[in-house]
Image (cartoon, rainbow, N blue to C red; front, side, top):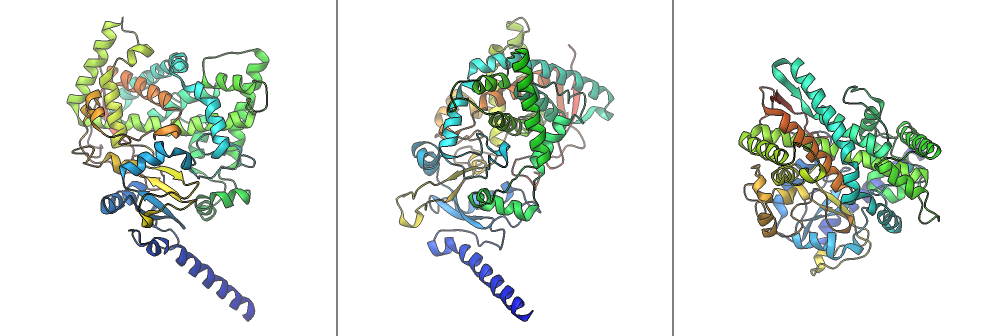
Length: 498
């Protein structure tokens, strides 16, 4: 027994000193950094007392100007935290070939839904991106527009009923927005009538929330997967629960079988994926699991992101009534000129609406940082700031969006920042809600479309204002990477006369 105890003590000591050595990486390199904490590194307060933004924002402010990047520790591993806009441009665009990978976990064999465009790297990502790029053209968006409009009209109907029954006309609006986007994505990506606007307990939405928050293993294993994705893949670990996997793969399999058997064609994402599945040749076609993975990431990328963005936009419009009035005037004037019809073309004629959405995404970038992975050693011009091969890289878009060098008075909500003239004045890569370069968000057109439609109809039919329950300053959820209001968003909603 004493020998076993001694061996355990030696093992523990070796592991401890190995981790301490690993967390002295930036000190040994002479790169500015905050001292890390074992075992969570820079993220010791994440998921407990601070959100990722609250941890990263002081680091951006403290070290900007000290060099092209500073050092952080993502859990157990050192990572590059980019501070310089020129380096940001090189990583995302100019030298993209060296930084095209995200380096996040995926295990398409044992965890098939992770084999999606967001998580895959290398040649697999390149092949899949090429296959899917034609899916998100403006022509394809125009075909899906009527489906989104149908769900948006249901949102207005449900909002009217809820407003009538709500005490003092006060509603928590983020839940309704998420049910709207769930119904849109359920219809466009999975070919389902989810009906979650009328039924908040719809299985599709319940499983979508589980996919975002539940994991196959406990926090310890999950931390290991996030820190060492390549090793986790070799150990055949999985991130998503079997329940979530079976549900979404099952939906896709049943939808594909039904459409093929009955020769059903719809103007939606699933139909485009079905066409890809039936392409001749193994290199061109998609398997059922690959289709399920792409439909699934469509859900994950569009479910919380678009709905949360709409919630933040309504919050800012309620706070800034003059902006809300100007936006409503534009919406009504545009519709009056075009027979009161909401069409794909008319929505895109509402320039101020797009400016409001762009400014919302500046203040509230739902994914507040971008991740990249160095495939090879990269020289920044200073030996001390050499980016070593296999380095994990963070580009803190939230910090850039709140940098007064690019956006004076960054706390102020000002859609005038996004006139064509103002956009031209700013350097590239200063607005990154969808990333930039060849690995930007492939679904940005769809995400913007469903948010623009939802906002246009809501502002046309309702006035939003602050209520006693409304937070003067929003706080963010601590446990998630995505930017999300901690206590929801409560607003007074007044139905306008038709």
